[in-house]
Amino acid sequence: MTDTHTDTTVELPHHPSPRAAGCPFDPPPALHALQIDKPLTRVRIWDGSSPWLVTRYDHVRTLLGDPRVSAEATRPGFPHRSAGQQASNRARRTFLNMDDPEHARIRRMVTAPFAVKRVEALRPSIQKIIDDLIDQMLAGPKPVDLVQAFALPVPSLVICELLGVPYEDHDLFQRNTKVIVKRDSTPEEVLAATTVLADYLEDLLAAKQVRPEEDLLSELVTKRVATGEMTLRDAAHMSVLLLGAGHETTANMIALGTLALLENPDQLALLRTADDPKVVAGAVEELLRYLNVTHSGRRRVAREDIEIGGEVIRAGEGIIFANEIANRDPEAFAGNPDELDLTRDARRHVAFGYGVHQCLGQPLARVELQAVYSTLYRRIPTLALATGIDQLEFKHDGFVYGVYELPVTW
Amino acid sequence: MRVTVDQPKCVASGQCVMLAPEVFDQDDDGIVDLLTAAPAPEHHDGVRESAAVCPAAAIHLADR
Image (cartoon, rainbow over all chains, first blue to last red; front, side, top):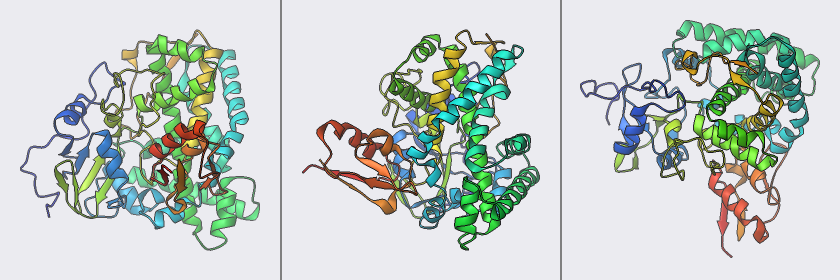
């Protein structure tokens, strides 16, 4: 068995590699080259280890669907995203880093509110949140930062309602989530931010034990903690995950998606005039594929030797799935996959991952994005960037890609 | 077309319910419920797409 830490003499490409200057929507060119020349290859990551990097769409789906591929972050060889995330993965276990059957048991405790019909029932209140925020924006001064005025509040308000978290506390959870999803955050910073959030949510959960309401946190304490299936602290950690995943990813899709559409006015026009919900739904899938904001990829470790594509991934070797480039694989997507084409059939993208860990909140994210993209550019048809695209700061250092600020005017 | 679903494998991604609501539903926990094992021809495309995108490969199709 190859030890991932001993082959330091081999010159391996460093991962992650930078995006090309002036191409903020495209994956790093090095990933493109690897997909063509060496779709399964070893790379060097931050801690000196050398996990596999998977860049082809069919390999990504095959391996992420393979039960021999483990999400257990405590296994040796697991390729953590950063020192901070390594510390966090060691300090708390959530279902993101468990394998079946344990993973399935825990995940099923929180799947109910994300069922399609329950999410559809939220559509009117999501629409109202969007309309109200646009009203406020139009009544206020311009230019305005779309991230703070709209992109971040929409999913934050929605997930707060679903979980039963008071939105007044948004500064606390947004600020600490920012620390958790930043690559350069130190282990101390990540652990401190996680503890603040877990303590905050544990207090909320404890209050709901006394006075349960109609929300997911109440459901967790009355159905899972009360029955001894889960400790209050585990429920708190799970809530940290849902709250963070529920606002950070969608917020980036809203802001970065708006920028991509402003840069592709013909596509924006198509969306602005679309009357068919199916056209809007298709556009959301294409934006998810094209932008793939979860650009730090999926992380796994092999528990057995796995033969694939003429290579053997040995038990104990780490695997990084570069979904952002898999979503640009010309073998999987017709036409030019590097173009944003809202009419493309993009439904089979892997932006939400693949396999049993595929995003739990995807029905909610889809409804939020459909409502946002079908409303914002109609209500503000003259929406425009208030600065040059080259002036924007992109989240190269984030686990979720996007823009830090998006100054817009109309 | 004959459809079967593997409920223990289902991870409640809900995509089949969006693609073929006449054929698939979800129970209270979001787990797939098969409404009909023999869908009408006009729903076959949606069922095929559902099987293709199902992240847990929990939908199986057979020609009858």
